[in-house]
Length: 251
Image 1 (cartoon, one colour):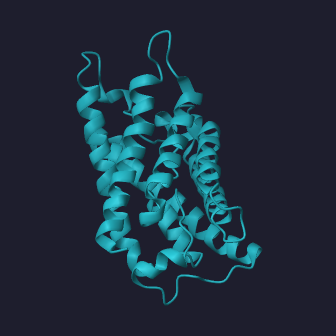
Image 2 (cartoon, rainbow, N blue to C red):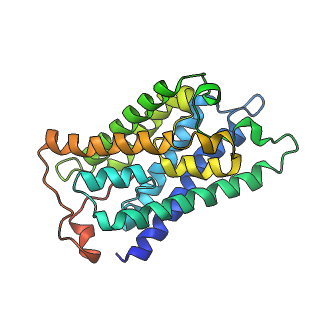
Image 3 (cartoon, rainbow, N blue to C red):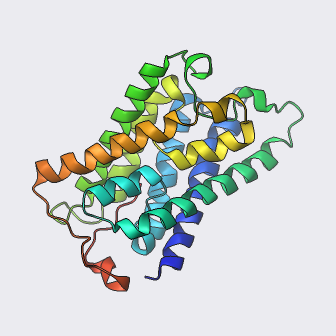
């Protein structure tokens, strides 16, 4: 599959993740009487990944996340040369999703970006008031586990056809655990898209939501290969043939 097609799929998929996941938090979480609350937001994020995995897993692998792409590079599942184009497409998709969400949310007279706009933060900007250390540990561990789930579910030895379900539910569980701590990032693109609209503190704290997820993903890439005994399947694979050799890895 040409890189342009794969990048376009990553753009659309990440757009949907931000609009669907963050949109559920901004528009629906606290809606009077029928708000979906924390559990609903967690499931919304999981559903965005599950739906896009079935829609675009066969096109791009449906990473939707620079940390996922990096973890798969380290784990030998993805070509290093495609990492930057994927990351650019993912961040661009996240910004586009945040822009559409802003246009919708600002149509309400009571909307105020000071409410956070589902941005990720620590300290006074953490939903539960958690410290920087707690936020870094949480984001590292949650991303690490996400990048254990993804290669495991897409391993050629695993039951086929169920990977999107396992990965979507994995992301749901991650959100159920960590929304109170950081509003859950595990995805630098998702964090960047919202932070650009909030500005100020969200931009100042954005570094944490790049460093911790990327570090957790890289460590998981090494850990999964060691534990599973899997060899690299990315080396020497080019063009459309890659789809038949490298398992599609949504996330």
